[in-house]
Image: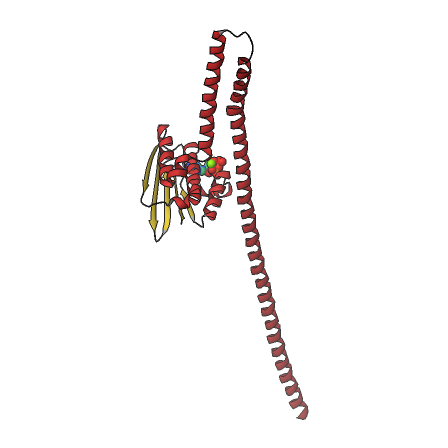
Length: 265
Ligand SMILES: Nc1ncnc2c1ncn2[C@@H]1O[C@H](COP(=O)(O)OP(=O)(O)O)[C@@H](O)[C@H]1O
Ligand SMILES: [Mg+2]
């Protein structure tokens, strides 16, 4: 009888011990699971941060590369269009100092000098205009975009519909230069890649924030493909928008053109 009781008690202890062991085991499993998933979340966050840093680096290098390309282009323009002409002007001026020149020779050399100086002046104006359009500098973004549209319209390849429902303070011209460059790039892309024939640009303002709506009717592109192959131009647009603390949304459907909206203050 006593033995029977003991063995029953033993069994009870065994069951309780097993129960406690099971609970402890499950708790341990839970803790392990929790720790593992926590580590996974941290790892995912780190990977996301890494990607962000990588993207920032790409944007920065796009800016640097574009700047260097621009410098190269300016150096070439200066060399080909100005320096070479001034060189010949200099040679011609020296010729004028030669003794025994006939009257006709003097007339010919002087005409040459006048012609080349005119051309060099014209070209230097064009180069300066390309670097910073004087209208934009003097009269602000609206006038700058108007002139840009006129230049594109005069090519007859494209028809631009430009509307402005806001005002731009000249004091913000430094910021507005970014907007101007963004539109320049978008318009060049519409012509070059999109083969667009109609472009529309609209500025409007909502709660103190200015919005720019841009569309073209070109061939567009597949968003999925483009996400991975943004060129220098698009990266530059993004870094300019980041500089303006703005937001950019871009939509495009193959054969249906593109639509871009960005805002800035
Ligand atoms: N308006 C557009 N219509 C069609 N495709 C476009 C347009 N804008 C951009 N793209 C596509 O996006 C790509 C990236 O453009 P971008 O960054 O300006 O580079 P890039 O002009 O130097 O090729 C282009 O090569 C083109 O395939
Ligand atoms: Mg481009």
